[in-house]
Length: 637
Ligand code: XIL
Image 1 (cartoon, rainbow, N blue to C red):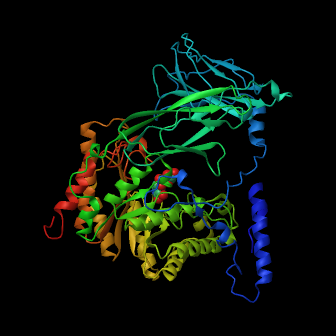
Image 2 (cartoon, rainbow, N blue to C red):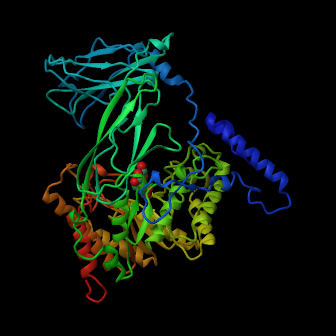
Image 3 (cartoon, rainbow, N blue to C red):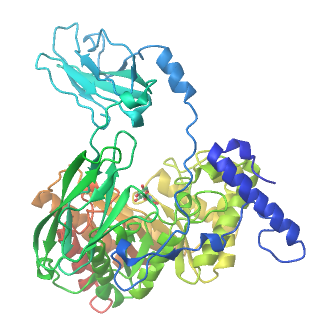
């Protein structure tokens, strides 16, 4: 009945055994009662999982109360000595990995290579210097770049065709580090040779011989905030010696509080309210925990703007949507009220949207990270925020093959169905009064139209029937909720969309409850299959299903950090056309974006959202406004 605890990492095993013991005890004492834990594989949420109020010094929520987890940190799985890395180290310098563009004639051109390299065995505190001098038998001088530098490492150019990797590993680097340099052919830049050097760092017999280096402040990014909004800044100290520095503010802003985080010892939280506009620099000092004279000061920059500096012409999107009984929404960054610009984020989102999806907080690895342990605080807080602003909440996702906790990945096949059911039951029961749209199944169809097979722990255990079971259970718990299958890459004609349609037909033939399809739509600015999108919507509507655009964003394909006017217009056009197609299709009930500001996007480098990083509206925003405005049922489209 129970998963084999020996398959779990050590720290989980202890936790697991404790939960098992609790289950066993409750079984004993409750044989005659209706205790929910009877016959369960893992403990249901209990009082010990109930979030507790968080002091206001730690967040900038306006109008709703923030709770935090009652637990401390998750237990860190003990690091077993990595036998595979050790074996690799002892086998000597890894062979170079040569890559060439498709069709490239490797006989006509020699690959660049490195000679005179070997793996290194050093002690923490030693200085590593490895010279990389790529050669090429064709006589050209190859270029090179590194894959990843360790903190505190450097790779300066010696100006003679070589570069030297310099690094002083310290206590926190003990273990085996891989430093990889890629040599690039001078004539054919796609022709490359990737060389890894392994460096084993051990603790010296006398660890006090390791130099004590100055601590650092992990530097946050740039933020734009608004005058009179509360700002919280979580500042994290870091010391390569593995100790925890103390953080101080030499000149705190007026009225600021500065306190250590209740759970994370290395984090300090600054909270204050800027009352005038301008560029602000706050200096943060990190003090070494061993030698108090060893300090570093880092500036943190904030751009404070007046309300009038944020363009807000025209009606809010949600007002335009409301007129046509339509939902317009966004995915909310987990714990946005812990970000410096959280108050601005919350305010703008509440003004524009009437539906919100948690971007990450309801994923199984986040909300149920260990058997019997539940972390509800972030989702509870989002629900409270949504209720304050009269927004609907879209639950995402119940059953997915990704972002799973390790204990599920390692669970016994025979137990998976029960794990899935217990999970759906517990999450839906907690939130069914607050959430009425659910992505019950996420990303189940593969590119070729078949179902994702053994890549999914759920399919592996139950085959296609996991979909039936999940939807049936969801319906029984929330009879009135809208139940969706949410899928990506189905905006075009092709195998994947056809596979989805066939799946729906099979489900309908088996009388499995299903209300709609979520079209994720992570697009690029060169998307042009609008006719196919319209056709796909029509096919889904003809199946009697609702359509939700669930995760729309439109990446700027060049990846330019400052997109050009042309690129922004192209992006706006994709938003305009997609929104237009949705509005014209009566089955399309919602347009939800995967975020709303480029400041917080899982594709941040491609600036895919309708607000920029400083919360200024982009042409894409106006495009949405126009579409929602001109296409009311009265005016027609
Ligand atoms: C993404 C989040 O945006 C990231 O923050 C996270 O690291 C990975 O997942 N399809 C989905 C979403 O259904 O849950 C994914 O969200 C994006 C793709």
